[in-house]
Image (cartoon, rainbow, N blue to C red; front, side):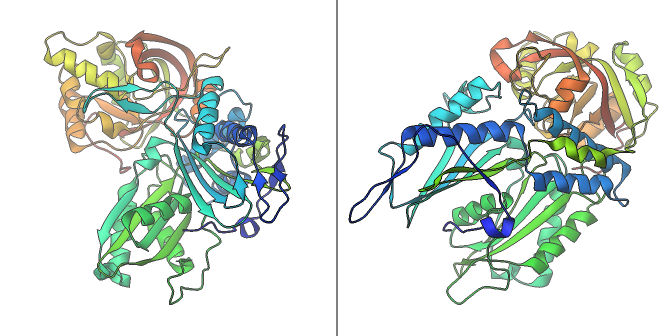
Length: 529
């Protein structure tokens, strides 16, 4: 899909970057715009720094609208209030918006009249590596050493960089920092003409939107792409659509030559489907989705790929351009505190759970609350996620037993970003609980992980283990990692598996950390997928 000019429709505002060397337009029969390496490096550095700490005004206004909505549930007003406060803390430029600072993605459209004299991908990759190292961001990229052995690359590379040739003498960019949780919710269905009826399509989309659940940190920016000359063409359009990059497509239908278009009627239907799930902004309500895009593409007669994807509440994408006039980057909101007025009269009086008592007392305290209850956590948590759990299970099966801390304290599935100087911990938030489902029943049978904290739903086997062993599963707010690190984490230390970096086991002390009982001790659960 060629680059489209969506700047006017989206009312984008750009700021000029003060780079050392301006683009130079060469004279001659076929003049070219010469762009130096330092310009390419500068726009990449500035962009991914901005994406770590700032959000767009349009996105923050959508969150504020939920907080003001009298029909929003108390729980979702509580969640979006936390997300706005999180944006205010992140805008200080120290703690990033989300602990998963994302895969660095660049989609670029390079005019044939642009000359850099360099490997553009290599220049941008070097700038990305430097941003992640200097800004205390989280390294999330894993390199395969063998089919099953892996190691963190230690620099958040490789980045995903796609550069397309287009006419003209301008260089346009879409930069995205996308976390694994929202990427994991991408759905591709290889359908056929049979899906192209109102009844069939509505049934399919309703089922798939319900299956999205809340593990990817709503409220979502949701996109649906129908058609495409290949699956990869479809998924490329989905990536652009979740970032709002296809908003300029015509919305009055297609043409005989296969012009892509948006369908506004189906966008409203998709919004209604999302409201009907009742998932809301994480803990129930109507605001699972803040906006929807439905894109229709041409297709091969024998196939009809349909994809669904989301951008989470840490909605991090930005546009940039290099022209003869200079280097420009889309403006993000640098003063998000102006949205705090929407956070007045948010419910917040909940019972406190003392996590420093013996485990049987913690379980007895939590046993008073049914699924769906909000509580505040105070005391010690053990932070551990995928790689640590793999080692726990390996030790157990090899007869070496489990560490005592898994039996004494609740376990929080999370992995923080790097700790900035002067801070207790880097940005910290829950990861998707279902990834630990294969381990939980075996651990709970040994008296470990009896209280678990994360985000999203669990498998029936975990619910059954809660019932059988008297454990429970709690969820906390996803997408408020800077707020959690600054306001709720009092102490933090690495206690095991230091070689795992952000996946090392930590002991933290929390203060008034909000949590929802998702599976109670009887195995009853709230529907959050």
